[in-house]
Image (tube, rainbow over all chains, first blue to last red; front, side, top):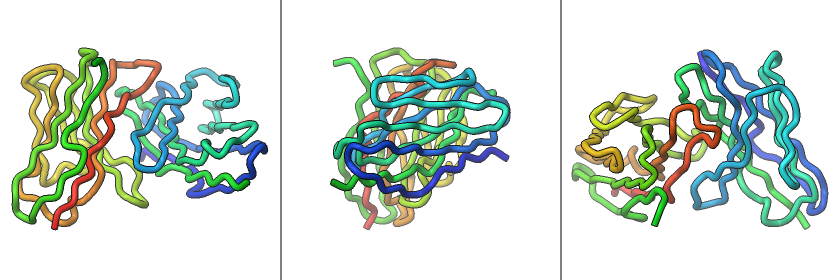
Length: 109
Length: 113
């Protein structure tokens, strides 16, 4: 079956670094997406990885290992506005997104 | 305005009533999706459409009906609303294999009383 696993909740301190892990099992693979979702709002696109390695985009970076079925989202210099849920999603061979349940990130001052 | 819009933003309806949630996109994306999001379950796919007049069931289709007569519109109908259908509903669109995944509408918060 197809499955995405990510931690339910994480807590970090303002200014620090946090890494949110995601493991996936899909029928075929066409990329790994990370979305950010603030409470009461729609998910918004953060990053896309289809090749192994690290993609850096400002304070956010995303890593993929296809052989391990593993990805992480790295957030640096955390700000209070980064408090949100982070959704991991893998695209299968039919170009359908398979979603994790999301990781709620709590930032403390 | 370009984008994907959902209406209404909030809806309260009674058990047994029919209710339709609207979704409209201006990008001419081929694919459109309906999800529901509940605490503890994340996003669950209800129905999706690959093109006008082509629709298919997702993970949780029971009690829902969709249609797509035009590329830009993808309404979701609850034929006889039940309390278990109280949820936040998101519409999304994408192009096949797009590197940006899906783009979501703002959501409809539906309460069935």
